[in-house]
View 1: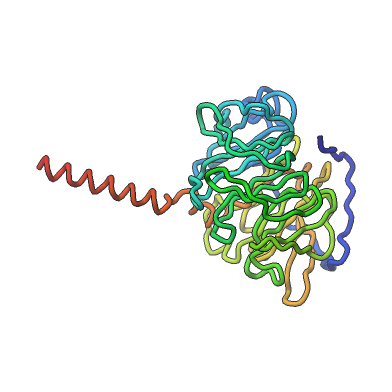
View 2: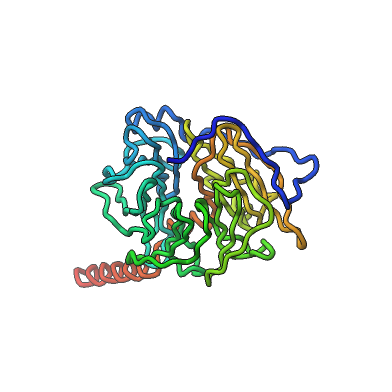
Amino acid sequence: MRKRYSALTIAVATGLGLASGAQANVTFNTFVPGSAISAAEGGNHSTIAFTYTGTGFVGSVYYGTDNNQLYSTNLSGGNVTQYGGAIPGFSGEVVVGSGLGQGGFAAGAVYAGNGQGSQIYSVPSSGAPVLFAALPDGGNVRQIFFDPGNTYGGDMLVTSNQGNVYKINSAGSVSLLASIGADTEGMDIASSAFGTYANDLLVASEGTGLIHAITPGGSVGVLPGSFTLAETVSTVPTDLCSSNNPLQGFYVANYAVDIQKADYSQFCAYQGDTIVTGELGTNSPVTDIHWDGSTYTETLIGNLPGQSEDGIFVTAQRINDVTTPEPASMALLGAGLLGLSLVRRKRA
């Protein structure tokens, strides 16, 4: 069980320059109120994870009532209800992720990992969850992330508390990508504007406060500096503000209260950068890492009201990925429409 921090202890990163006179300018608002989550989860609103599915969102809660029962919301954060059946044997920090229509994973398909075990389940919106894979190191599943392109084969990427990062294909076959040597958690792929580590998989280690960079071939680097209780890592796309879709934004589990959202427009100044949150008991820091062409600089840009847990940056690309059918699906749709046309002609 991970220790929960109740005292505010912010350590300034070493090796990175905190921007002089920087002010917090990213603000959060309640997206899913704790009362609505509590009503769906038997009185439990200790939010842990949250993911976007295309038609809405799916989240999880911490130890206690319905710890192994996911909940869902609509696109506005309302209509909170239980999602699917209870996941067998799950406890602790139940993490969730949704497919992006790449590598054979269905767009919007929900997967959940066991915070106190190595199992990963596929969770349908109704009916019983199905065991999908298990981590070979026997460690706890800490994060589930889907490769949005083909840099990592479009596979599911999973971190464990044993310090390993795995690739899992759509058939449930597990292979080791890299070993960090420390508890690993949040992940995202760096933008093309992120200097030395452009397009690498960035992985946070809460225990060490380090952000590791993993190449597609499995080589491991370390960003300069350290980040207090590093929790989430989120890349701001270089074209984030070319779309004004109001769904875009940073959604994060504000433990143990609710789900918070920061609108995408607040991140327009940080396009191409990497955003990191720290898991503090209150006022969790939100920091920006920027490559200026020669060095990396860190700037405090906001604070989450409570304790930062898993979050997701919903972008125009992600919205497109989970709402646009895969090529195979499009082919099937085309075949279906052709068949319907032939039937109509025959009837005529």
